[in-house]
Length: 261
Image 1 (tube, helix red, strand yellow):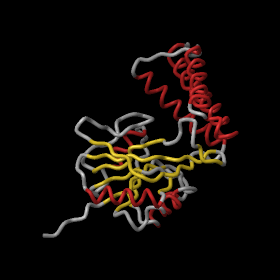
Image 2: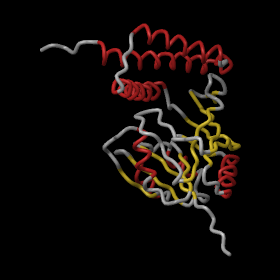
Image 3: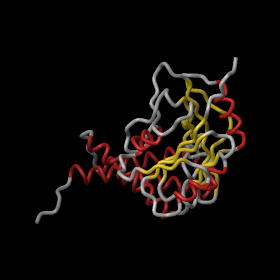
Image 4: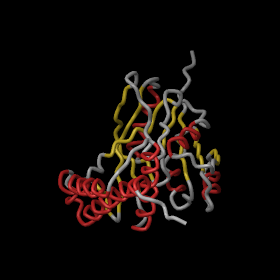
C-alpha cells in the first residue's frame, strides 16, 4: 500500500515587495511543494521575482481588506497544507524542521502556531509584549481560512480544532525606517477606524489619550520594554502614538462635521 505524502504550500499576499520577496522565498525554496502569491497591484519587480522563484502569481487589485485578500489567495492553493508568510519574514532552519514534521503527521483538525521574532530599528525586540509573538500560520487547507477583517485578520478557529506550538522562530523584519513605520501604522489605523465605524462604534479624544497612555505603560513597564534599550523606548512611544491616532481617526469620522460649501 502506497502512503501519499501530504503536500505543503506557502501563500503570501503582497504589494511592491521587491526589496524583501527574494530573501523571503529563499528560506522556503526546495522544501515546499507550491508557492502561491496574490498581488494587489505592484508597480515594482515583485512579479518578476516571484516568477523567477517558481511561484504561482495572481493579481487582485480591487483591495477587499487583509482577511478577504487572504481568502482569495487560499482559493488558489492546491496543496494539503497552507503555510502563511509575509514578504518581510524569514523561516529559520529550526522552524523549517518543525513545519515539515507537523505536515508529515497530517493531523486533519490541528492548527499550528509559532513564535515570531521582530527586528526593529537595528535590534531584535524580545520584550514590549512583542516576543514570543505567537502567530497561527499553518493548517490543513480545507480546515479553515482567515476571517473577513479589513485589518488584524485572524485564522478562524472553533472547539473542534487543536492548536499546537512548533519550535523555532519566524524572523520578522518589521520596518525599514521611521517613515515606513508611520506609513504602515497610518494604513492600519485607517482600516481599524473604518471597520469600527461600520459597526456603529464611536470614540473621543480622551479615549485616544487614555488608550495611548495605557499602551505605553503596558509595553514599556509591564512588558519590560525598557530592557530593549533605545529601540524599545522608541517602539513604545510610536505604538502609543499609533494607538492615539486610530481612536482620533474614529472620532473625526463619527463626531465631527464635514466642511460646508
